[in-house]
Amino acid sequence: MLNSNSKKCWLEWLVVRPPTQRLHRGAAAILGLFLLVGMATLTAITIDFGYIHVAETQLRRSADAAAMAGCWEVFANQDEEEDLDYALPTLVVNSANGIAANNVVGDMSPLLTHDDVELGNYHPVNGWTYSSLSETNAVRVTLRRGAGANAELPLLFAALTGRGSQAMQATAVAAMLNSIDGFTEPPNVFETRGILPIALDLESWEAAVAGSTVDNYQMKDGKVVSGSDGVFETNLYPKGTGAPGNRGTVDIGDSNNSTSDLSRQILHGISRQDFVDLGKPLVFDENGELHLNGDTGISAGIKDELASLIGKKRIVPIFTEVSGQGNNATFTIVKFEGVRILDVKLTGKKSQKRVIVQPAKVIGRGAKIDWSGTNTTSHLLTPVMLVE
Image (tube, rainbow, N blue to C red; front, side):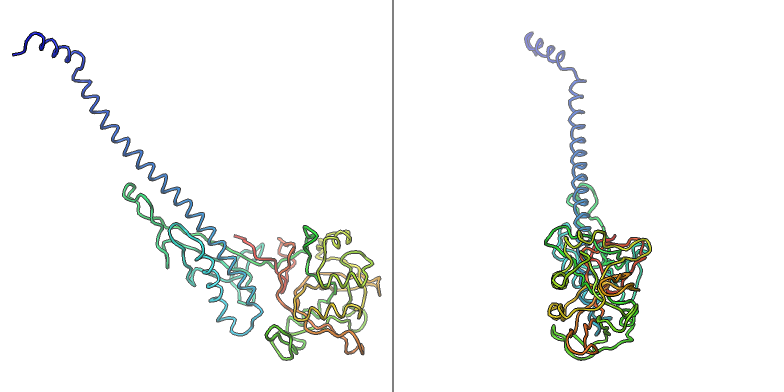
């Protein structure tokens, strides 16, 4: 039996804490638990999505770097004629893989298979096409997680989200474009453009590229020696008179280029000041032409400078016609191309004088891209760049 005081306390408790309020406290606890689980799940999803985004960025960066490495490998090997069809794809894959292996995507460094690396040609207008290896100027890399040698990206909160992994892929195309409209001015006094100030006529250039001239020299152990290498040669030294045979030096700079100016340009390239002194952009006009003053003939005063370049590569202007004689000549330049200098002799009988060059792939630093794709070259390329 409860005494009067006990009854009073019990009644007071019932009045202060009714049954409905106790039920609300229990419901709030259950609701709080559900909210806590929901927030934890949402947080887990957010973290996983952030992890996926970071991994996708890493994958894109790795694909870009692998494509560029593969494209540089193409350039390094295009002068090698022997077993090119067999060796080049493997060399490109190995080079691309070497870079990809140094980049982490999520929890691993992905690997590329031969199917992930493609060789082709990239044109500013037509885009990507497949081509023969000799015409390859681009590499396309597709880097994957979830196919081939790479597993899907494992997610961090699979137990909460019910999603254990994420497949992803990124494709990148790197190219050395061969649509070149001229050259830009060097950005500072320390940088130059590797252009030889000696012009070659288009007819002689095309004959060498077509293999209808002579093949008397080859590179062996880094030196020029006698012998055939399958790459034909032509002579920069003037032969005959009148266009197109009336070759000579061109003034890429002051119109009164001295022998010392030519010597400097031969050894070190076209400087920023030369571009200023030229007084106009070194680019083709709407007709695809660039008119440069020049001097017919090649002076023996630059023989030592030319001889120091034997075995090295340079860029030469290619012309279709020359008007005027002597130092009043004007050359109509229609393209720039890459050559390797093989032999120089500017003394003795005129019939024996020569500056022998052969077509050679050259990277044109500061080359201005012709995005219309009109002015194409065969042996002059821009530095490797990402195009897709």
